[in-house]
Length: 415
Ligand code: ADP
Ligand code: MG
Image (cartoon, rainbow, N blue to C red; front, side, top):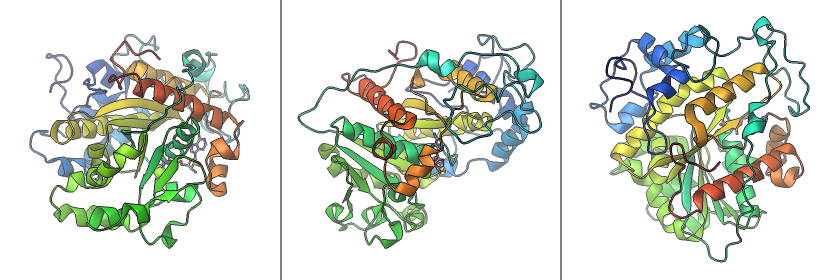
């Protein structure tokens, strides 16, 4: 695969991978500031040589660090369609003290107070998320269930809203009458905790299903208080699987094998991945039909996307040819800050209709729900967060349940 025009070879890290069956274009890489960053990393990688797992350990940490070190000072080239200021990276740099979100409070107050602290941030820009908002139709009631679409919530960065999205998208889909299985695939067990279970007290978890041939799904599966929402929990035991699976036959297919008998019982199976691109993530991507990437609206989160796309593409090439990127979900969005709005606009420029019209705003209500041990859709059903995850569920249903076309096309998606 080549990326970039022939006269401008892509010389850095493995090329960013495709999106929804497409390859990431040079324009997309440029928009995300990746072309320069990877050139600076100077670490040319022969993509043909490395096996999937080897290539997906925190791959080429040296280059990843170089990318991080390049930081916001890296000039983004070729943002020709963006209307960004010439010579700028298109992102307002926060002044000392930060023009970023200074509050974890409800960010929908319309308070513009966060603006104007940086000389470059004084432009008033309309909230780009509002102009893209979609209101997907109410899902049709279903009489029968399955086969499930298996969706991996994946991003090797922690704290971007994977677990929150798994719980609340799952709960919202269940509210719309879908049967949903949440798979906690993170040894931290945050999804299990977020639904009110104490992971360390569980005898049987997903770990047993992965490692023991005779472990019983029925004894592992937990029903939540929400009708239609079940969980395969995990706990710290799962961290051992990453090591133990290495010696197994078809180690990348272990989760797929566990989920195969369950697909007929559910409409959606959501896998909450751990924040890494190791063997567990590869298992999730191998088991999945689609990937949803929660992406924090913050500068550095853009940098990790190329590595993630690269892993997705490798898994597609070698293990799971039908894997698509179902969508990119902007999370932790703060419309009051120029930075948040600009990062969001940049993500939309790069990925277009792949970005869900629904955007998850930063709000303290989410940490509250973790303590409460229930989804926001039941904890605070009228809150902005609950409304947003119901809107996301409608979008996911609209994209998934319209015949065979589950992934949006390059330009023609109806978002
Ligand atoms: P991940 O699974 O990607 O590590 P989480 O979903 O666990 O991320 O979120 C990390 C932390 O951020 C949690 O404490 C969670 O409650 C909080 N959080 C998630 N989404 C939001 C949001 N939209 N606004 C504010 N806090 C959030
Ligand atoms: Mg998590």
